Image: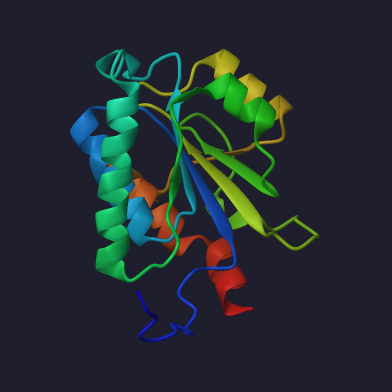
Length: 188
């Protein structure tokens, strides 16, 4: 095997984005894996929450993770990225919160919180990594919300379109693609 050409153009963002996504119906989660790969997410952490649809993968966790990795690889090839997306086994939300070490930690919830445009405004140091947590279709439980706040997660409002809720999958895409944090970091 020989190297034909060295790829020198930079395609990966210097901002490490971790998407912590609650498990939802498998075909929708597959789509999330594909689009988050295309948008530049470095890691996807499937979450088990109080209201998530985790029973669909019980006993098949290894198979599901392998499937998500294949979907991510195909999306990576399609969009020209060069670094594999880390996709872990499903983790409990409380465990994820306790061990997340990103510089900026955001979680989105319909009840209360701040706008995404204000999420990084008070951050005085350079942001090299951001964790974006999206809850299940049933929302977060009060215990999960309180625990996240105690662990330093900023409670953000979902992106809305003319006061109407937009579909969960479009919110995910728009948060990743239009985040003022990611656009600021990319321009540096």
